[in-house]
Length: 170
Image 1: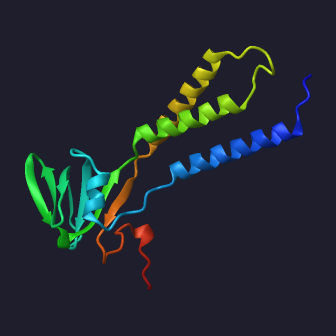
Image 2 (image 1 turned 135 degrees about the horizontal axis):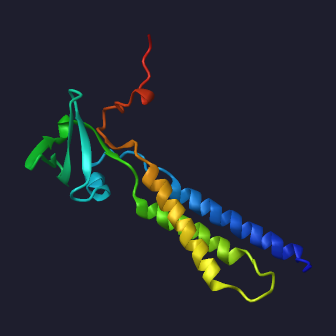
Image 3 (image 1 turned 180 degrees about the vertical axis):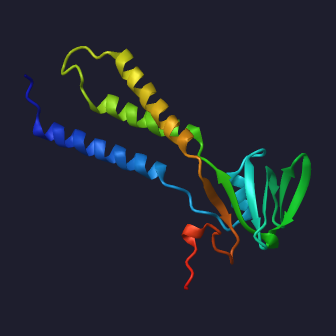
């Protein structure tokens, strides 16, 4: 049995801890923006979004663009513009599968680099590649399973309409 150097074990443990921390930071949820400019950056043309106006009416459609003055959607084949002053909240479903894939593959790659499954024997690159791919697939699967609506924009003077986030006194 091979004896490990305690300094080497501390180094590997530290590297693994940093790797987990970086992965956790990458998983952190984005907070809703209060800027149409930032909203434009967060959405791609064709994303399905749900716009809650100041009356509480929800309009769903495909995102076209967000200008300084208005949000433009494609609703049932027709372009609809909603003035910025009327937009209370913008939501969308789910999470990108790509970031889950990349985070999972990153965890798999870190494990492949930091561990020595052969304990000094010849390294099997195929097994390590399979591990990276498997972890990537698990990460993508987790993201694909996320199906709740996420608020990505809140009007500057409005609170979220999600009842779990709204606190009222009796």
